[in-house]
Image 1 (spheres, rainbow, N blue to C red):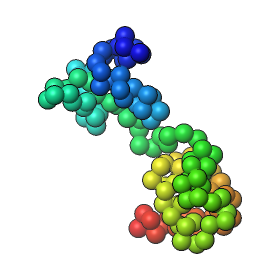
Image 2 (image 1 turned 90 degrees about the horizontal axis):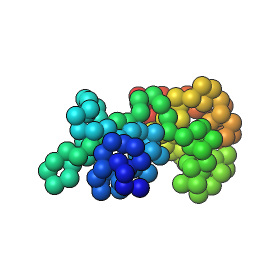
Image 3 (image 1 turned 30 degrees about the vertical axis):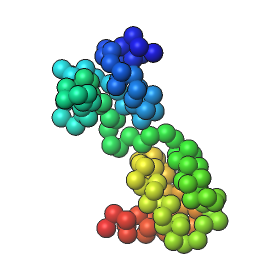
Length: 129
């Protein structure tokens, strides 16, 4: 992949090593002189060789169906078959991963969990409170 790690403008082994991860996160590699507040500097042997600019926090990574599927996989069971405590954990994981930034997400999560939207909001209130 070398040649500036697929168009990042930075030709460095560290940039090449993290390029796929950065792309998967929906982030971008920036040159050291383009770093802004909030960017993550990539440091190699004490020198900033590039930076990672993350997407805005309100932008979830992936789509809601993928997030629901990954949480179900992580918890080892379809979401609708989970017990109450596991459903609360699922909502916490989905919240951490930005699932509730999607439009109508509470309804979709409630349907996947087999609970009401009101229940999902109650779980979220406990998590956020």
